[in-house]
Image (cartoon, rainbow over all chains, first blue to last red; front, side):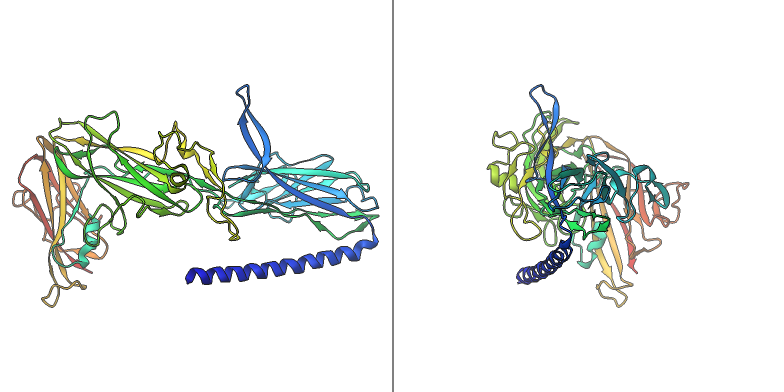
Length: 177
Length: 370
């Protein structure tokens, strides 16, 4: 019975979650509609793959991207965010700013963030962003240079203008804790 | 020995036998943490802001890239004995202690197998039983209120990620064996996910899985209650380094020390035998040395738990000359180093060399329940 009740409670709370999500979605659609006077619209597509190490025919370890259908602690995941201008107007140069918080239960892998034509900055608090050299964190009461695993969020600033129909992508890797 | 003191709720003389490895501490191995739990949903969402003609537009969100964490099936078995366990030959009921840790990231039950037919030893111990530590009292206790006997497939220990189970393997030592002869028993823990899906619990069977093998939909349920994630065989199953099994060994010793501690009398402040504050418990530790040689520099230590207070003057040791058994001369700089050390709350009896087959030595003392 305890299990049943717990399940029920979980299901209800999940339903509430779903309702909340629905409300937010509606709001976003509404907001998009309101700004539709400007016809430019940037869309984002987020995908995940697993980085797998295998031994090639020459007996050397090599890395490849595979579906993230099966991931376990210690695996490396690579996220790719594709951005597109699906509207009819040019998006201003230097104005596309993509922010991706590091997913829960993962830690960022140093040097893996990439994005052609972008400047990349990081944050240890999710609010202020800077280049790695400028980031510090407090470790055992002492301010120290931040390490990759301290990063909470990554931000890419796309330098060129994004013309209608144009697409770009940025990516980064994490390790599942 | 603290264990036996804690058993005082059972009033009269319930004997509790423990093996004491004098001078050797159990080395509990530390094992790696499991990591993110099986079934966790890992979501990733990006956001973009942008401007058109200098006018900020409403930021957009990406879809959430979603992945579920599979169950990693891993186990580590550690030998807790800190070396070969001294036994005499023949001897019944010789105990090896192991600790199993679920180093995977999900809930898993484990099938336990003890194998006494392994190479590299002189004799094969005769397996009697496997026991699961279950009563919270360190060491194996059998009988009412004791630890649980293990039945394969019947009470396989179910462990959460990072969970541990202390396991005792009980064997009889055949005789006669020469001094210093070793007998090895190997204990292995095979996850039931592996046993059920491969059909074998024998790592030398061709059907036993390799590291990285996975069983679709055979792991824990995902956190949304949706479906079972996959189960993946972890690195503890590497054929070159099988962490899920480990040997323990018995070594026939020229002298074997056995300790049996019991509460032989209880007197409460009202003249009865109830256990209440103020009750005085008389404990007896029987020290038996068997074998053909001597137990050298034998020291018996018994730390008292915090709720017992040693009764000054109550220590008596049958083997020591009168005068050396008193408890008021204990000091690291003292003459016999036998007595009650108030600093460490420990009763220490220095028996020096005791030859095998000597009469049983009785140590008695009294303590008061605070």
